[in-house]
Length: 471
Ligand SMILES: Cc1cc2nc3c(=O)[nH]c(=O)nc-3n(C[C@H](O)[C@H](O)[C@H](O)COP(=O)(O)OP(=O)(O)OC[C@H]3O[C@@H](n4cnc5c(N)ncnc54)[C@H](O)[C@@H]3O)c2cc1C
Image (cartoon, rainbow, N blue to C red; front, side, top):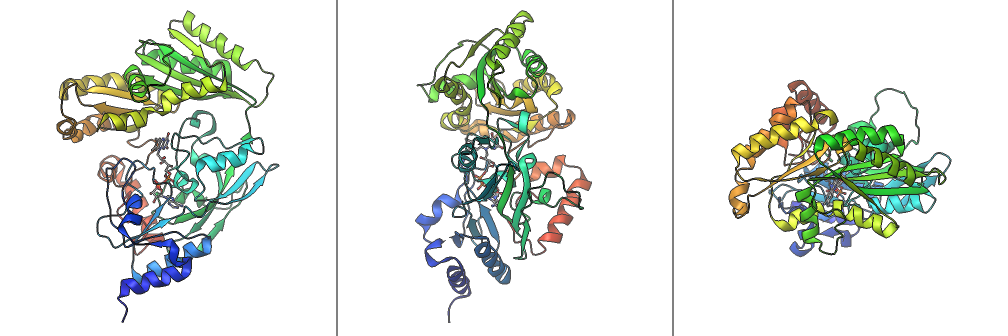
């Protein structure tokens, strides 16, 4: 008689096709380790369905057999949320074969796309019709729409367009009981009770498997200007944000803070990068876009930056002269995460506080951390226009990284206590996953945790949908 596990996999194979059930350790390997190499799990198989019906069939088989499921997109998440636990009893459900564009409606300005499409594919589908899907992350070549929505991804254009939640009009979801909820509505107005899509957005795959989404599109920009600006302090950078918002209104799309050390690391590990403004303490990468092409966008930006120089909040600035130069300036910012990874282990925080609270938060955190971890190096960058900082700490020069990493708990406590005191969030855009479950329990109000647990129990009473993540 066939062993029960083998029977399940045989039935899964007949649902999705035998070549899409991976079981050899070599095939499983890339699905079992997270992008940062921080978590390693085990699984009985990776299953790659090609349609919503196939996803639903696999989910029903898993429920019947009490098998945990871990949805996975591009596996670029930064909290271990897509990595299975170590028990080896789970199935990883990879959405990578569900990558079709189902439709693009110009008049409605919507794109309907399957969850396994990469973010870059969705952007390209929009661009081909002179439209813009504005979500933009350094991982966009690999991360998927399903992962983006499940993590409520942020990125570099949240200031103007909002995060993934604000860019989503409808969803199709396979529920934890194997039924399909077709909520693929492209409506900007729909007040018919609870807005269920918001349960699944940001749920990190714990409430169901997103199989497709209706996304909002915008007119593609016809004019674009990108500037790297040197600022004397973070206070000055925050004042510059207010100045640029006033001068450029919603043409201001991105406002990324970069510390001098972050820029140096980016350049060290990507030596072909330019160094247009050497030797400053802080930088801001500014992106302005306009869907009209006759608006003197560049001149407006130059005038605003000149005012910043007069006000003493801008030390110097350079504006990209071509697409290639603009891309080089963006690469300085986008290469920081990768550069940090190459540089060695570091203690990371993805936090947000109200924009107005950023300068004081940074002063307090620097004082407390310098005293607790003498010589610690601050690698600070992020989407400061959204109050979101990647507040990362590297070992003091010469200290073995491993010894430094043992103090992560001390650093986390200092940073998260200050964030909490400032009314901020311990996870601005990366989610909770496995990494911050304990921190969530510490900082989230008990009533919020209770409501989350009740929602989870109502939708997934067997706790098989990405268990031991988030809650
Ligand atoms: C270099 C780099 C830069 C990054 N920059 C940013 C940034 O600026 N902003 C930002 O927000 N993030 C950023 N990230 C993090 C990451 O890219 C995002 O979290 C992204 O949204 C994850 O998408 P993914 O397809 O890789 O998801 P995965 O890592 O595969 O999964 C993430 C979570 O979503 C769940 N999931 C995946 N697909 C589905 C689905 N179809 N249905 C239900 N659940 C699903 C998984 O179970 C898991 O819980 C960055 C990552 C890297 C490596």
